[in-house]
Amino acid sequence: MKVLWCWRCKLDVPMLDEEEFARVAGLYRAAFSPRSPTEAPSGERRSIEARFRPVCEEYERLTGFHETNANAVMHHRLSQYGPPCAHCGKPLRTPEARHCAACGVTRQAPPAGGQELPPRRV
Ligand SMILES: [Zn+2]
Ligand SMILES: [Zn+2]
Image (cartoon, rainbow, N blue to C red; front, side, top):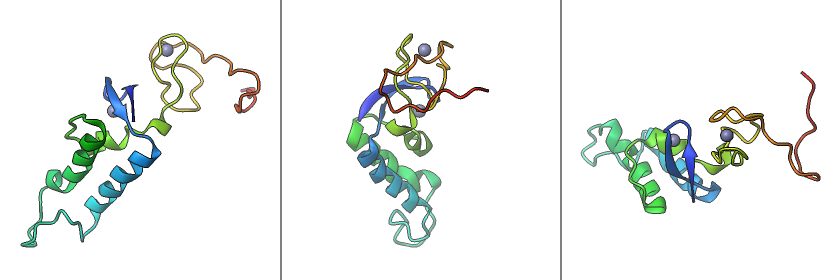
């Protein structure tokens, strides 16, 4: 887990690494399942909020951050974000981003020997 700026939420939020994300993603999928363990024993349908509550609870357990929106949890995944902008320090929106959406600066050339693809002519 690592706290990063989320451009969707406009907040610094804890982002999950792949191992942590796999746990909440499993709970998220389970919430869609007809055999969801969150289903009330009586068989009555629980509210959407109740079905997705385990996602938020697991996220809070992992990060200590109280979140009530399972959809927000699902985009707080470290691998979805790029490296920090050299100018403003906010993470790029995607690992492939060519410029920083927060301050508009063009992404710096990666250090020699990096694994970046060569620049493409448009
Ligand atoms: Zn977010
Ligand atoms: Zn920037």
